[in-house]
Length: 484
Ligand SMILES: Nc1nc2c(ncn2[C@@H]2O[C@H](COP(=O)(O)OP(=O)(O)OP(=O)(O)O)[C@@H](O)[C@H]2O)c(=O)[nH]1
Ligand SMILES: [Mg+2]
Image (cartoon, rainbow, N blue to C red):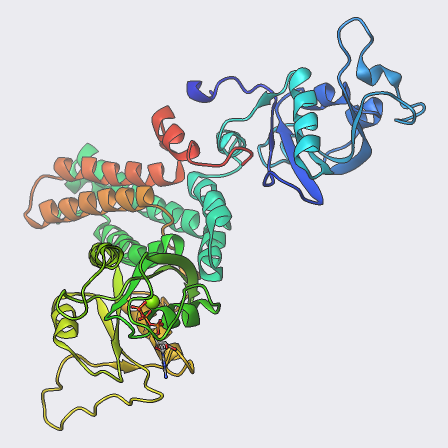
């Protein structure tokens, strides 16, 4: 039964490629009866109606006829489109027959020419003959409802669309291939086995069954499942890092080389660099790929206290923003001007702000001080870099990756979680299993443990969508793009 919020299962259509000028655009459609509807505005209606699944038909989209003037499609095959008024576009139509389609329904992908006016005209023609514009995620919701995708795969589709780096894409594609779903299904099977054993013990006299009566039946299965759930939960911050990225703020005293470092990490001259202190006023943000981590990198105004040359208003406001950004950052890259050495203002930030990577810039002309010998290394341990020559930037990228908890070695080969929703459900299953084991350890009656095992199985079922409600589905699919 389709959830009420997404209506009716009627024929839907939407642009699946980005709007704007392009060589081609893809308009997808789906729903029972959609091919018959499409054929009423297609130059070769019979060919389209009779086309087999997974075949491609060439022809023209025609402007719908107004009622009484004869239907567009009634021109038949003869003459194709030649000379006919009301041509909309020459297209290729990929035909799908159930169940062999993304949604599991009958449908067609229309490849038309890209461009705002053409796409709009094709969509208007579709609407005029009865297609409704799809809601966000409606194609994927139909795929889920028709058993084509479980929820972990559905969520991975959007993850894939949004992936910003190769590392993020690899992880999402692993989930699309069913790596997480396979793991959750295996965990559910094991827990159901433990639950069946527990219920059997509850239903029958223990002596009659020849069971020892000691502890939780299927305990090894429960312990193994708990270990695997803990592993999934522990790996989540790393998964999220490659999906959502992090915010790194470059800070330091005026003229330390922050903008130079920003440009060097970006690989382009984005931020203005001059020899005069106080060049950067407003902060500048850019997205960089640091070893597969989508990092929002921010260049800020140099930090200094009033005391030296008077602060003008713009510089003062800029410094205020630098401090706010430092507070929000997941990581600070603190740049010390090697030619000036460490100042009190540097020490103040270096001693308080964490996580932070202290950088000794301009190492090409001012090598970092060698730490005095002794057991206690003086804090902080500077990483020498040169924004000018690029020296030390490889080490800096490795340090950023380590500081943010990245660098998971398996590159998506292990099952990993793809959303906070999944992580919350794993935690729910974990807590239930921990409590069940704890009760068993304390010698409590088995009828207290059984519902906890059931709770864990249900939580896992919600991850894949075996257990779902209209609310859950709406929350998931409404975040998708229209046309996906
Ligand atoms: N030799 C050398 N000069 C550098 C290096 N990095 C920056 N500089 C120079 O230092 C000066 C200041 O560089 P910026 O990148 O503008 O410094 P900033 O920290 O952004 O300065 P404000 O925006 O004023 O706070 C410029 O003349 C740069 O060419 C470096 O690694 N080596
Ligand atoms: Mg600057």
